[in-house]
Length: 496
Image 1 (cartoon, one colour):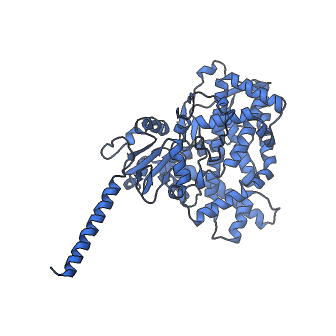
Image 2: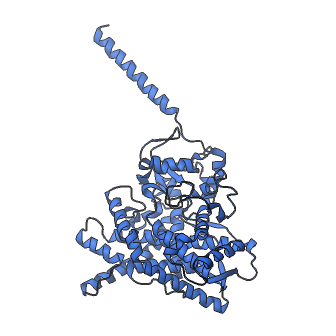
């Protein structure tokens, strides 16, 4: 055997051993633990009607990081604040690049133009910048404070009318109309709901149905081969619901363009700003981006604010002593029957505790928005394979008994002397997510919810309809992309 043959053979053997060593080394870093999958369906049968609850129960068996096979899709579920911090902060760049895009978002190609579903890319950065600058910056929020104040006054006026008539009202419905008109005035300079008449109820239903269709388990998402079949008709229904909203937005856009052509007085709302950006640089955004942005905002701003206020009121009505305590604080600091201003919120410690406790127990998006990894990622000595879906179960984190004493008890006092913040820095409480994918609308929510809730509590006493005792109040959840109360809360306001 000559020298060159020996060298070549030796090199081949070393290369072979190196590859084997890499494969073996990689194999030792396996998937996180999880339930054994069934043939074909994997673990889909374990999700149930409330996946956030089912996954929380499974995490008690398999641990705070676990993997499931949902059809063809590997899904990794994080159920602890410590590992959530690794995903959303320490390794945020690796885990935030892409979304796991539900098939329902293909309705009207929404996913291609939405800041929620786009991957991190130049287009996503542009849309995020536009949102932060024109809607959620401190300066813009301060400039629109008068709108929020006016809508809360309208809410209290309607409740006062119900109080005089001894009439029960749907708390979620009136909170929705308040949020809807606030947002529509910010975006379009007009109400989309006739304040507190029975009109426009359909709009709330349409928005909720979109959230349900996008959020619920869909076989197409786990078996891409079924995409053209749309077996559960999820995409079909979503096309109808999204189409209704897009038709509304298209009409509003055309109405504004006609006003601009006639030379009508310019408005200083978000629609005007977006249309100006379109005219100046059509490559940045077009009408498809605008409609998808409005859809994202209507889902995030109205549905989540509504559910938070409704859950908070339900928990307070279930424990009347909490209502007495927060009303005493409001009377001392604000004065009885006075509306809450945004500048007052920082002085209302107990009211803030109630909101934190509500978001701990009833986070608006219990699994946040699903993420997808584009390459193999090492996490806690496991390998998360490329293409996996990653879910953060903030509902489970909020009820983790290692973090919270008596986690199933609604107890605002637990936040009395804590420094927990909800802006994505304290991972025990991340209702809006964290990192670069944190919900861009959280600054508005943190202004609107305490003012609305505090004004309701400082203006009226609240009781359940006749025949319902506080201890019997139904607290069943209805799962979607957001977490709603399964049965609407109806309560009667009476003078303080």
